[in-house]
Every structure is written in C-alpha cells, then in structure tokens.
Length: 463
Image 1 (cartoon, helix red, strand yellow):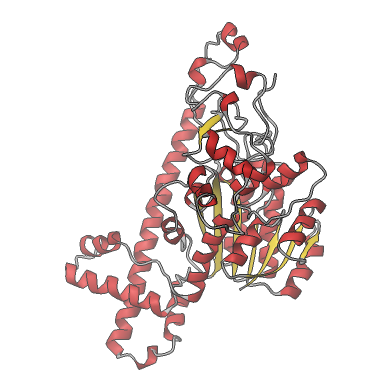
Image 2: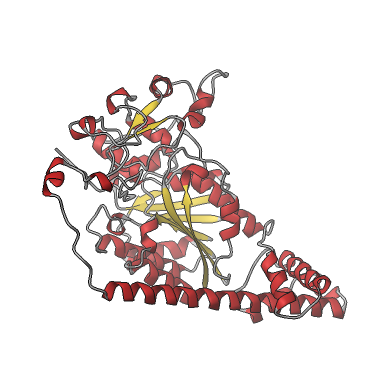
C-alpha cells in the first residue's frame, strides 16, 4: 500500500511501516531539523510544510493518491502536563481528519496520547465524527508500548480507520498482537551481549553500563517514581528523560524507587534513542542535546508501528478477520430461541461469509450483502447456501447493533451519574501548610508513574 505520513517528525512511524512492507511515498512536518533527520535515515521524500494549511497540502496528497494517510498530530495540548486546555496544537488533529476526508484514502492510522479520549476533550471527538460521517469505520485502542516491541511503559491511543468498515473492526486483532508480558530493558538489550556481532544491534559501552548498573533514573513527573530496574520497562520518554538526578530528586525518593537516584546508570541520548525503538545505525543531527531529545521524545516507536502495520496489512490482504464471538452464539440461543446446533451453523456461516469478504465488516448491511454477492464463486453456490450466508450476516448485524445500543445506554447512565456528582457541593479538603511547605503530602504517593502526562512539556517540580 502507498502511504503518506503527516506530522512525521524524525521518521519513527514511517520506519515501522516500511518494515511492515508498506511503501511510504511522502512525509511532511513543519520542523526543519526533524525533516532533515528523516531524509538522512528513512529517505529523501520528507518535506517541510504547514499542515494546518489544507489548501496547500491537500492538492499535493491528491496527486500522490495514497492508500493510507498516517500520522501523530501534536499532543501537548491534550496532556495534563500542559494547560489541560485544548489550543492550536490540538486543532491540528482536526486538520489531520479534514485532510483525510478531502483525499479519501482507503485507510488512515493515527497515534496520539491516551488523554485525547478524555471526557473534557473535544477535538478528537470532533475529528472522529468528521471521519465517521465521511464513511470511515474506526478502531480506537489504548496500548501499552512495552507489549508491542519497545521496553517503554508508554500508553498511547492508536486509531485505525477504513472506508466502509464497522467501528471496532480491528480491535481484537490489535489486542491479540500484544505480548503477554511487558518487554524489559534487559530483554531489549540482551542480544547485545554474548553473541556474534550484529550490525543492527552491536555491543555498545553505553548500553553495557545500563545493564551492568541494573537501575535507571528518569526525571519523574509530580508524585512520580524516578528509579526503575532494568528488569522492567522504562518510563515514558520525554525531553528530560536523559537528565541526571539533581536537587530534590536526590534528597526525596519515591517509596517504590528500586535504588537511590545516585546509584543509577548514566542515560544518554543514544540510550534514549534505542529505548524509543530507533536502530543503532540511526544517524542523528541536532544543534544540541535538548533539540535531539525533543525529536526522540516526539517520535513514534517504529517497532510498535511495525506490529500495527502488520495487523492492517493482514486485514487488507484478507488473511485475517474478526470471527463471531461466543456471546453471539448465546444471543442466538437465548434471544432467538434456536437450538445450539442451529446457532453453531449460523456462527459458522458468519465466519464463511467474512472469509469470502476478505475479512471486511461493512458499516451498512445492505452494502455488505451486495459485496458478498459480487464475490467470485458466490453465484455458483446453492440457493439455500446463499440464503443462509445472507441471513447469518443479517443476524450478526442485529446482534452487533443490540450490543451497541446497550453500551450507549450504559455510557449515558455513567455520564448522568458524573453530572449529578459534580452538582453536589464538595467539602473543601483540609490542608496542612507545614506538610505542603516540606514538599509532597505523604498521602499523595498514589501513583507509581505520578500524574504522568505523556508528552514533552516541562511542568516538573523544580528546586
């Protein structure tokens, strides 16, 4: 598939898609340094552009005729590390959606922080509605990147859309692509030692120090844990992740720190780059370490996108599809008053029809059946078999619609309960000024990661 990436940064997403077999034909970003690094490492097809200017970018993309548009629109305004109020950066998510609608590729892929799904966030819901009205079925999954190929406990929203599909059409496949356990720092770097030299993952003294020391420090967010062992994933990488512990971070440790911050390995931009999924051969160029770390922190981990890309490719090729689950079988028996044998036959026919449709699940049942009838070989089936396949798809759609209505009713009830709680007067919390002046309140050690915004902003406790 031909792919165009928007908000490409230094090229992590494009690298992952290329490794999954996609043909990335163009990429765009407004950061000059990021574009230079992309061209140096991925290919000379990245260009500097203002992606909020749809009149400029849409004609270029129409000429390229991509099968998929992908990207990670800037996320700082979504995160609690920023103001928490959606501003101009958040609006670029809407520009991303409008570009997709104007160009109408078959697929789109978006990566963003999980906070984009927050109850008080409006931009992604607006963008989602624009995309749905244009005919895209959308899958939204929040993933832990340490289960998708990088040793980093980075939580991210992955949104995948395809024209004509049902919502949630890839959720099961994406979740099943995750590993049972998180990838640790030691595991990620283990093939650096004790083997024949590997040009893609050679021995490196900076990596050796990390493994030998056994503990790593990353500057924590408010209330956050700063020290981890190499037998767990690294924290979400930010621009300051490679900075050594100073001031308060040496004097006030978190209860769950695995060691004292001064007994940790020195973290360098090279180590951060490897933890973010970039290969050893990646050649970075930047004016200073701050700018370099900014690009690394902004990047989308290539191993994660390789896995997501393989899931998309499998669905495109029709080699995978989401089978009818056991709840559908129970629904047929209990609600439809059918025997279990009849229900199993219907469930089997749903799977057969999905296979004939190359895994597609259309948003419109009429279009789905019309597509089934156009599949080569369908007209040679017996009349009864064709009728059974059509009826199986109709019943499965009826089941999905009923499940969807129940889910919406539950969500509406939850939102009403939240509104009721907000209307109740809240008793002010008693504050101990002495404790506040001393630093963090003891009972605020509630989160291993702290109030961890997943972006590159600079809202840290400073001395």
